[in-house]
Image (tube, rainbow, N blue to C red):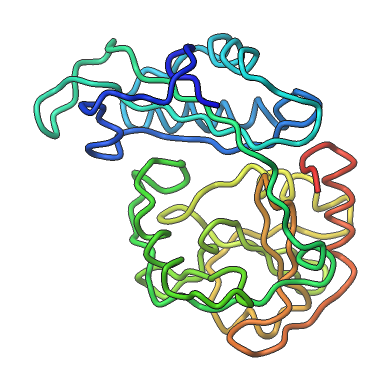
Length: 274
């Protein structure tokens, strides 16, 4: 089911700037027992994204009221929140600030991923498609996702679950839909996202909670070869939780206990569902 500006509908104006230019932002989050997990974090990122694009972000109370109007059951569901600039303006020139944005809400079934993905790990590959470097758009979840779409279209093999993406300067950034972490000794490393990538909500909480599993968080530039020397490597986002990476381009990676410790910590703090 979808709500558009608070009303049940699956029709949107063909003049909507989100359709024409990807002029907007979105959030994808978990609903559990009718409550959106990490709502404050998601709303803050949504607000930052709108502010970065010069869109008037709807008040939090309006979005929560929209969520209350959705037919939500107790089991886990996926909630997608999309804010576009709405309609108006001439060509690329946007309408003036104060123009009402368009709110789109949708709920989806919880994905039925194999349990082995989170317990044993996934097979992955390096993508040929590179992420562009743009500090203005880095970090936020804007609607322009063509790089990820092109990257995901690089493989059709069902045995490959995810693709790892580098930027145009050969820095490892993330996967097509997840943030990336490497564990080396007592350090947990994640790529610097100042110029590319999405600042994920689960990523944020892992960095905040790392000390509780005796790890020191480090944000830095990471080269692709470091994947093969790390003690543990995993992906994370708000829907999948945590997936260890067991293999990249046919080469097996190391495994260890810290990834599962982090998963249990996130579940305890109601950051992820799994």
